[in-house]
Amino acid sequence: MKKELHIAVLIMAAGASSRMNGIKQLMPWKDSNFLLETIKTVEQSNATATHVILGSNAEIIISECNLNDKDIGIAINPNWTKGLGNSIAYGVNTVLKGKAEVDGILICLADQPLLHYTYLNSLMEEFYQHPSKIIATNYGKKVGVPALFPKLLFDDLSNLEGDYGAKKLLNHKKHAIISFEVAHQNIDIDTKEEYEELINKTNSDTKA
Image (cartoon, rainbow, N blue to C red):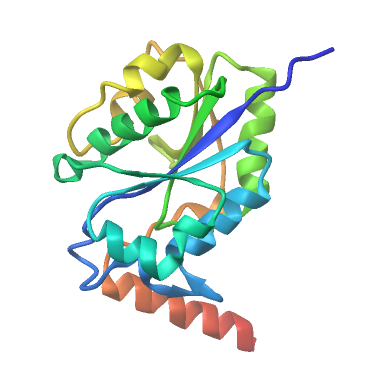
């Protein structure tokens, strides 16, 4: 009988969103906000554990989203100003300190509001077939997150630094990577203008 693989998801939500002119994680989206909708998407997937990695405005976000009432892991990186890579490392180390054995870690961002849980499941299904490879999202000339990392790279993830996230691993030729097309789902929202454009397009599509 094939062993069930345990996949933990890290939702990266530690940044200060300085270009958004507001707390990006709390920007209104669908029935709630960016972070809560991302959590909902992940919880609808086949992942076995969900962890939210916070930093800037952590207490406000926890309060506004009632995160303490949810069955998820919450980690606050005290060094979030050192960049996404540092926050990923903090999140991975938090997961690895837990009691559950983890076979893969799926890294997602809290500012990709169009992601669907079926896409996350497709990454996991591929990982079940190739549990020693990175399963990443195709961005044309590069690959990025969401990306699912195998156990053999946990040490590398736990030592990331700087503001380049997992790019160091994703773009290293020595790592075996399978990339997936995700169409429009991989857009991320960094500025107020991009947010307003997303809302306008969503409203326009709804009326069409």
